[in-house]
Amino acid sequence: MIPAFPNPSFWRARARGLLLVAGLLLAGAAGAERADRERPTQVEADSLRHDDVRQTTVFTGNVVLTRGTLVIRADRLVMRQDPEGYQHGSAFGNPASFRQKRDGVDQFVHGRAQQLDYDGKAEVVRLIDRAQLKRLEQDRVTDEVHGSLIVYDGRSEQFSVDGGSRGATAENPGGRVRLVIQPRSETGAGAGPSGPAVTLKPATAPAQARP
Image (cartoon, rainbow, N blue to C red; front, side):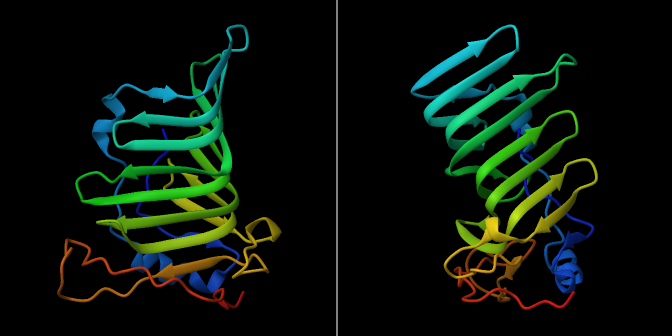
């Protein structure tokens, strides 16, 4: 299961100047919907190939995995169980994506990248190649981060975000790490414990943080 947007104690990123800002303004986020852990996992795809010896299952073609509020969409999904019984998965797409509700609040986390890797033993998720992670309140984006590689450690609840060519887009050809935090008004619809969500106004240029 892909963990949701956590409460990071700090962000380790190449854009060092964004560390304190991210740690403060993204504080208050909680873990994934707890009820999802008790829900069955369902996978739909155009085709399936299973190797019982290697304990590997490959789904291809319009793959949709659901488990409670968690939804993963990909062109190809490889699931594997290691000898110790831990689950590992890799989702590939253009892009592959996941969405999951946060526990106890009306908020969702949405992640997308060309590749999503999950290590069940280490409890680490890697979003690889044009990676993007957003937090949403009532389908409005409140916080988002972009990079070439986003790694989330579920045990320590820490992120690392790296820039590079694999994070390049038309708006950000250099592939620099970009963090966007939307302003929150004190009144308005959608107000909650962490403040009301506002309509997304994406940045038009990467953040120019100093090392």
